[in-house]
Length: 62
Image 1: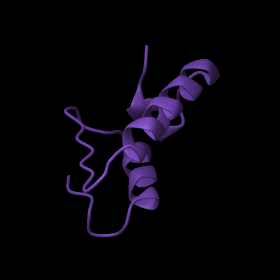
Image 2: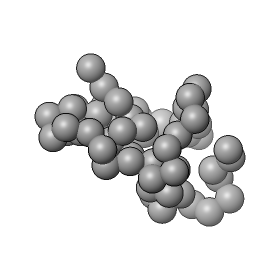
Image 3: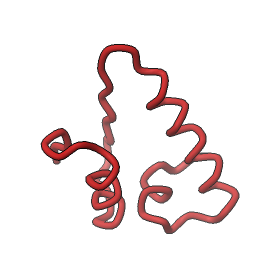
């Protein structure tokens, strides 16, 4: 199982963190023209802070 929100928050087990990180990397790196990352659930504050650090300012909408 994967948990991108827990991976971003740093609260996941080591094994699931690695699987989630790899899936997230593949998902983001395959975009050709535009990338939209959509979370259907609310992100924990730690996860949102990580996403804001990884992506350019002004492109995160919550």
